[in-house]
Image 1 (cartoon, rainbow, N blue to C red):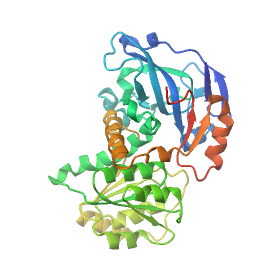
Image 2 (cartoon, one colour; image 1 turned 30 degrees about the horizontal axis):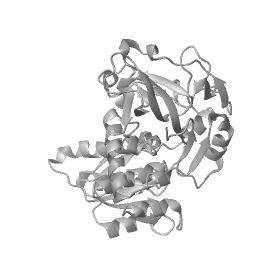
Image 3 (tube, helix red, strand yellow; image 1 turned 135 degrees about the vertical axis):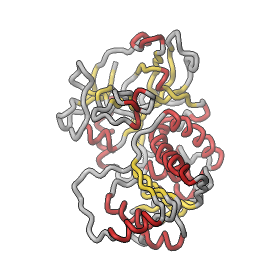
Image 4 (tube, rainbow, N blue to C red; image 1 turned 120 degrees about the vertical axis):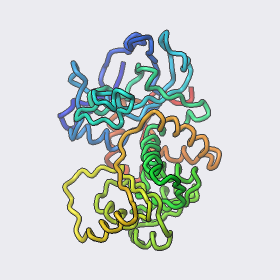
Length: 370
């Protein structure tokens, strides 16, 4: 069986591998789900693993099958699987439990372990292969009507968790009815966060670097959000026009912008950080005293959010259905750069490096229409 894999720790080692066929019986307790992989989304994570920046092979193997954004069709299930049937469309979750108390209660996305297990990223093989098997506990059913956009569910789950965390935290207030939000970044995560917030009825500004005209700006504004170019306006200007900002979702990984966001966050507001900065950048001219004062006096919160729980995937399915009803074809418009077949892995890597206009690059493994 074919798969796209790397030798972790060896730069530019991506290759087409021959890997063992999975079987339903590979999963204990009759909970196995065997699926044909139809599409797999790829992103900077896959590029960075191929650059040997991180990633580790599962025990007993010297290679790692990459790809963590799955979409497939169930071919067979174990004797103790009742929630899925052959023919169902599924997306598999990414992270698997470790040893912390959070892992043991199903909150592996909140693990305190130094070592984590993520399919296609670290110590577990991913989905850029023809078939996979996994436990039904980690399989999310996707309705047939959403099969053309199912490959977007994993990145959507990350945005869903970030927003859910804000609402969970704000239970402290007794009542929290956010009306105004800013999304920092208009890449896939930023656009999906924009979509989720608009589905919930918030007034949204999507604040991003690229000037108009650009496809990402058009997509943001199709949802009713307002797109603001960071080269034209400062975040301070946006805050002055928008008024009290209840929620900011950061999806850039550009750390200096975080301090601007802390300063412009409104009273009783939440800033959720999802981007990861890869360098050693230091921020100059940070208004540290002003930020500290406003955070304390304004009862503000800054929180980091990574990965996602099952509830976030399931909420993503619901929001997909809402988005399709509100803006038909919007989600499909994010799927900008297909790669047809596992054997075209070099094209996949080229696009990950060179396609600056890409929103979502994905590999069409077996086709999503069957």
